Amino acid sequence: MGLAGNLRDYRFVDREGELVTGAQVDYNGQPAGYADPAETITHVDAHDNETLFDVLQYKLPRGTGMSDRVRANTVALATAALAQGPAFWHAGTDLLRSKSLDRNSFNSGDWFNRIDWTYRESTWGSGLPPRGENAAKWAYMRPLLADPALEPGERELRTAHRQAVDLLRIRFSSPLFRLGSAELVRRRVGFPTGGPDQTPGVIVMHLDDRTGPDLDPRWESVVVVLNASGRATTQAVPALAGARYRLHPVQAGGADPVVRTSEYRADGSFAVPARTVAVFVSR
Image (cartoon, rainbow, N blue to C red; front, side, top):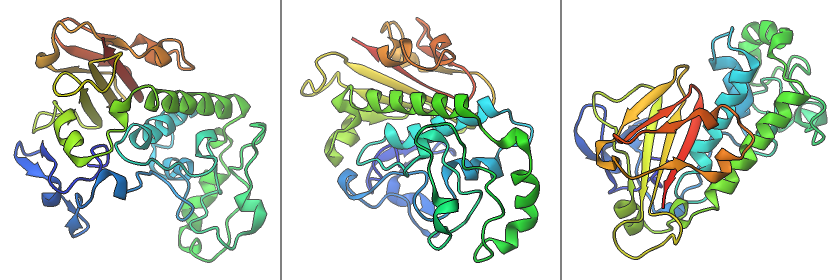
């Protein structure tokens, strides 16, 4: 729903195989779809609550390597950067900003809120955050903050930043990522691999410029495969067979060598590595 601008009347096939509208999708007792694309700010972290990197430190399996943690950060940012409507990134989230798991840092001072824009120092592991809203989780925080394997170095910070910049270049490479109206979103945005057989952790989004006015002079179709899972995936979209998709030029020459192994096949399937967002375009 976030990728489609949180539209109330946007229709898609849910995990039960039913055609539903955004208003029918429950989000904590309220409709997930309720707005126009210009009326919602899509984000995965903000100034309150934990930073994205800190949330991933909590939620990823303890043995997840730092390179995979960086990749998970990029995939998460992609769900905002490639969504319809205004996208919001928390300051420093592109370089793995941490507040050392602080839940609410408004009164935590510069030490827990600082950002090293030179990429030399991670702000992870700065100490146990203030009691406030954190004390109940101190027992979980201590072993995480003390684990040297969970602290990214300069190389990881720079890698995360470069991959995030590629996402922004992709967003502004085509007006299909910024349709601006509910009507255009309903007509141009689709999720062709939904239903009960969908792959957990994977979303396929299709942006279609083949009907109606020509919005993008370069590409008639864009396919985004968001693979947040720890396994490579192959997603079949038979309706797109024979269309000669190729990896987006930003990614083909970009910062991530892993995404360059993504592949479109003539039968309409898209092969994408684990923890990777791959964008394919068709002229």
